[in-house]
Image (cartoon, rainbow, N blue to C red; front, side, top):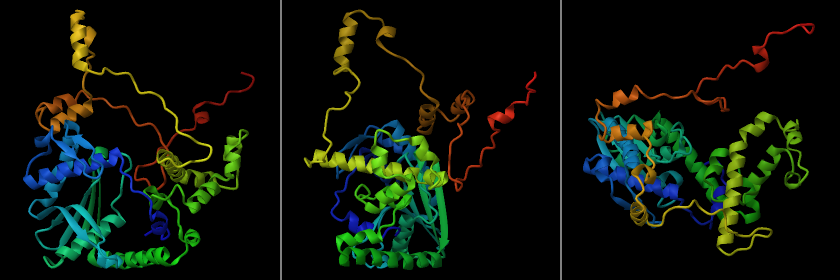
Length: 395
């Protein structure tokens, strides 16, 4: 959609699944089981969920149950009096004119009046807030849902909702069906362009179709090798890479360079940091695969923290030493966050939780830099110099 050359650049790149992504898959499975069976998430505490693609296993604990329950409660509120379908495969091949193109929508809701179709997406991660407004993924899913269930009602609008319970974030976007169809036309044109680049251009020509940017580069598998992104980073920083890697690099002088405005540099920081992480990850992948990367090698990193190999055996030995309980164990109160999760799963009663809430304190957030598009109001701070009165030199 945003970078027509990325389809060609990503071709042949291996898919990778992190532990965080697999944890999200397990959370989706938990939500699906609970909604389908009409249970709360707490009913599955202790169950092991295996992620098939990676083989990783996750145990449903109170933390996962509490966060997934927030999503479940929201879906049940949206679905009240309406028709709910969980984990539905949607196909939008007709939009991009490529067979077998689609995805799985976490929840689809058809309103009882037959006028609205809803697509809900659970994002379990806690890294980046995702906005539903003009979100291409959800709009494609909405088109797929409309293609599947369009005959059920006379839908006038589509509503797309992103749920991020671990960030206490819900983002909602609604548009008319006409607006959705207009997006479908645009998506089809972009897909045609990207496929044409992949099928007809020579590899050396891909660079002319690359459009680096924060959103399109964030999850791109090829960003570590993307020449346009590397060039973009170089231009924003304002110096060539040889200068940056030299021992005599003057960072202060670089920041004061007027050739690139400081605001432009700040706007690109997230993208540059993502690029740096991608380069590091690609180097590690190649070295682990036995591929040489000139100038670099794998070494043993910092060793992990010490821990007991068998806690029960250690406990028995300590008891034989006649150590006191307070000498053997560290005790501390659970945090307000943990207490709130216990309240959500019923361990702490609804009437008991308000008593604990009254005892919670919270420090004010520290000032941080954000783009002007951020919804939070700007802070008005008094410059330090203005806090002092002018004093006569003689005094």
